[in-house]
Image (tube, helix red, strand yellow):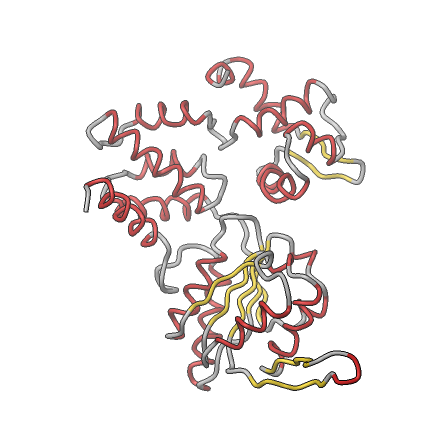
Amino acid sequence: MTQMVKQIIATALEDQQLRPQTLDEYIGQVEVKEALRIAIEAAKIRSLPIDHILVYGPPGMGKTTIAAMVAHEMGSKLWRTTGPAITSPRDLATIVASLQKGDVLFIDEIHRLSRAAEETLYPAMEDFRLHITLGKGLTAKAIEVPLAPFTLVGATTRAGMLTSPLRDRFGLVFRLGFYALPEIVQIIRRASRIYGTAVDGNQAETIAQRARGTPRIANRLLKRVIDYAVARNDGQVAEWVLEETFHLMKIDELGLDEMDRQLLVALARKYGGGPLGIETMCAILGEDRDTVEDVYEPYLIQSGLLERTARGRMLTEKAKRHLRLETQGTHALFP
């Protein structure tokens, strides 16, 4: 095995280790964690699978991690798929028929299930049965196939797109919000220990301030900082390493990247601060509506830089102050 292959495998293992395996390892989302702990303990006492779980929120908040933790805590096997990958009721039937008692089925982007597949899922979730029609026309015959009791964990960034019948079949519904700065600092320091690279509290906070309250982004920024340290400073993280890394990535002190600034600057200079319609925003960024509403808007709104009104999106006073700072100095770092 070559050294390069060994390094790729080692990196993959490190990245997998970043994902918490137990509730005790999980940082943040305190109320969600406590509710999960109680539900898991009750399910174990009853010797039953935990209720079906719906988890929603912006990308990178840990929805997949929660599914993996539930399976680990319950001592069950985790099966993973996505809504778009299930193209027909037959696909879904094949998956759920393969599950063993207590298994956890994770469906990401569950709001993108087809209507036919979704309707096949209803009796599977509610009664652990599949309703199958054999044959066509006058010879058609409906049969029921019993399933092993399982737990479905559905994840979505668009909870409003779920139909009421599907949403109502989940016993536990959790919303994952943005993480507080101290929580992101903890996540970064934990990840740095796994990577075997020392990052002190101040350095972790500098990274956390740019992580947009999102664990996935925090871990990605940390990895880029470590890469720069390895390539330019013998693997040692220093203040200048942080500065050079973020300059290279064009990420400012609020965690805004080039696309974020492009949007805010265009909104300020070309549209007088708004209001601006969503379609115009999509045209400015060159992205589809789902990406703008799921990836860009949530953080800009949460951080007080953008306001969503009935007339459209508006630039806030905080954003205007930040943009003035950029024109005075910071913006020159990101040509």
